[in-house]
Amino acid sequence: RVCKFLKDAGVYYLATVEGDQPRVRPFGTINEFEGKLYIQTGKVKNVYKQLAANPKAELCCYNAATGQWLRICGNLIPDERIEAKADMLEKNPSLQSMYKADDDNTIVFYFENATATISSFTGDPVTFTF
Image (cartoon, rainbow, N blue to C red):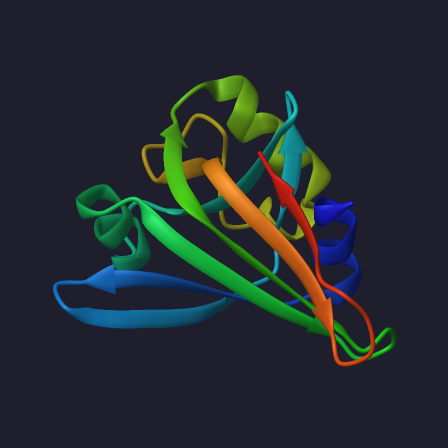
């Protein structure tokens, strides 16, 4: 349900920490692989360096069609396996012109010890842990 919500929203915002400063940027790719929720980035990007130094992250998105928003907080753990990278790229074809599963740049992360909450102004929040 969480992965579907993210895909339906289209864009989510990922927050990391750099020193004592929060850093937020838009992301659009999400994947479920082996029962885990994955994101993808490049090792040359600051987001990778920030997660390598501190795996705590939070993301948020809003679905205007439903009036609901989703927040996920947890640790993002790198997965260097070719299989995890290949699955991400296969399910997110827009990445294939920029990344390859076997290049030295592509990295995928999965959420660990995560809490996801779907909220709205009209109903009670629904929370998932994974």
